[in-house]
Each structure stands twice: as structure tokens, then as C-alpha cells.
Image (cartoon, rainbow, N blue to C red; front, top):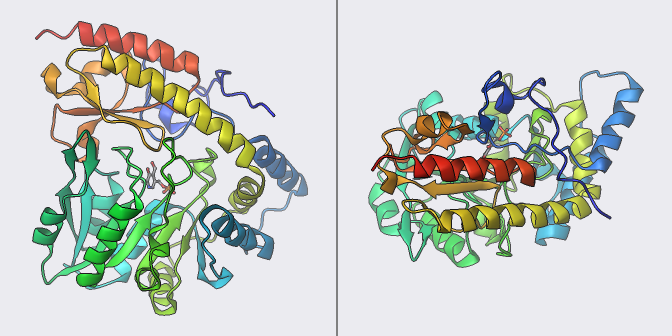
Length: 383
Ligand SMILES: Cc1ncc(COP(=O)(O)O)c(C=O)c1O
């Protein structure tokens, strides 16, 4: 079966955050992490059917929806989870905030490796915790965790670590060995780990994704794993995600912290999630092939551009591009002036003037035009 990723769908007049930002301009939006593709056909069909039902009362996840998650974990990751471990949520950002407030005391510290998706740092701050950023380091052409720096960052107030695996924005798919080393670090310091694995089904380089909690039962006992169909199947606007929390005490603590502020799961999101997990795999396989093509195009363009470099995109549809040699004060603003709506690296706590993040979850034609503009914009930099 063949799916269409080439058609350019007009989102400019829609409710899209990504496209509204540049409404009325000639700037191509390549920032916030959703894709410009329609969701997989089985997801759209399931939603049609649910909409035809016509009643949208308060939700309670159906056993088949929870079972779809259980079977997905077993099929894709060999992870045998219990239905009772699943906590349905409206999103991962909510979950990061719940984790931040659920464990420890105000003033306690949460480790996060940077650059990082902003809510990893803002969630602890929102919840009267202190986010402690520990920069990743570039070794042998890829971003890795600095375990010496992590050790140095631990204090008597360190309670948690927020892991992003795969890692947005550096597009790393961490290996089992790297995750094992991190698990050892967390065990030694008795840290609770919230592992955001929202990009886990978007691995482009064949590194097998290892859910952090599957490393060892002792690791599972201190882990909150966050997953969602949002990124892979392009349904983030349906606000549906889930946490998998094997330990009963951890789960009760998390649920207590969520009570009263976190809304019930969304009826359409639950339907989309089940359809995606049960029937989305052929579409996902083709998506991965398409995204690899896009990533290759970016890599080839960057290779030929003086002053621009990039580490390989191992996962996600986000390229983390080093533009520091161009000497731009604010690369995001500079490229906007050249018709490109990238995210500036500072959004992810990278030093100013060093990086941009390019979202390549778009048709090849859109990307090709963006890369032509990128070439011209880089050539126009006065150095
Ligand atoms: C690592 C990561 N976590 C969470 C999210 C957002 O999750 P949600 O929309 O479920 O709040 C994103 C979106 O870009 C992300 O990249």
C-alpha cells in the first residue's frame, strides 16, 4: 500500500499554531513539532465513525483502548505491561508538570540534559522545583551525555531526572549501553526518572528504541514512561497521551498530584490512539522512509554549505543545525528575514547564535523550497 506524503495540504487558514505564526507572510513554518501530513487513513476513518455517533460526553477509556497500549508495548518493545499501569493524560507537557510536583519537596532539584525541549526546564520551575541543566557534549560527531557533569550536578536536593529519549532537539536515539549507564547513575543517586519517549517510533537510523523502564525491574520501579501517538501519527491536537507507571506507590503519588487539575482523556483522542496503535504500522513504515529521504536531503545540503554543520538525525523529524560559524547574533530572526521559520536554538537553551532547529515533517516540495532559501540565506551572510 502506498500513502501520500507529497501533497501539500493548505494549513494556513486552519487552526494550526505552526502556520498561524507566519500568517500573511512568505515565511515557511518549520518550527513547532507537528507534521504537515494528514493522519493515517485508519485513524481518520475511526474518527469519522466516532463523530457519526454524535455524543461526546465525559470519557472513560474503553478496555480495548487500554488493551491497544498493552499490545503495542508487547509487540514493539517486548514490554509486558499491566493495564493498571497505564495513566491516560491530555499530553506530555502536563505529565512533566505532574511529575515535577508529585515527587519530593518545593526547592528539590530535577536534572535535565540540555539543549532540551523547553517544558523540561519550565515544568520544574512551574511546580516550585529547580531544573538543573546539564549540557550534552559533542563527541565523535554526536551529542552524548556528560556523565562526569551529571555526577557533579547531584546535590542532596536532587530527586528526579527528566530524560528525553529520543532527544529533542539533538535528534539522538540513545543506545542501550548509554541508557544502562544512565540507569546506573539514577539508581546510585536514588532518582525518580520521568522518561519522555514521545518520539520513540520515529527512529530513522535503526537503533532499536529501548524504553528506559525495560532495562531492569529496579529501573521500572523508579520510572514514569511517557508515550503518545501524537508525534508519530501527527495527532497532537487531539491531546491524548499515556504514562506507564509500573510501581503502585509511584503511580498513586503521580495520580494524587494530577487529581483535580488534569482533565479526563479526550474521546476523539482515545479513538485516534487506538486506531494508530492497532492499524497505523504500514503508514508509519512509509513515513519513516519519507522522513529519511528528507533528512538525507538536508544532510546533503548542509554538507555543501560553508559555515553550517549538522550531527546525523538518528530520530525525530527535527534537524539540529549548527550555524555558529556564520557569526549571526540571532539566527532564528536572520532566517525569518529570508523566508524561513526555524526555531532558534536559544528556545532549547543552546547558547545564542549557535543553532537552529529545522522541522522536516513536510512534503518534499516544501522542504526543497526551504533548502533553496537556506542556501541563499547562508550565501548572503556577511562574514
Ligand atoms: C520531547 C517532547 N515532549 C513533549 C512534547 C509535547 O507533548 P504534548 O503535546 O503531549 O504535551 C514534545 C513536542 O514537541 C516533545 O518534543
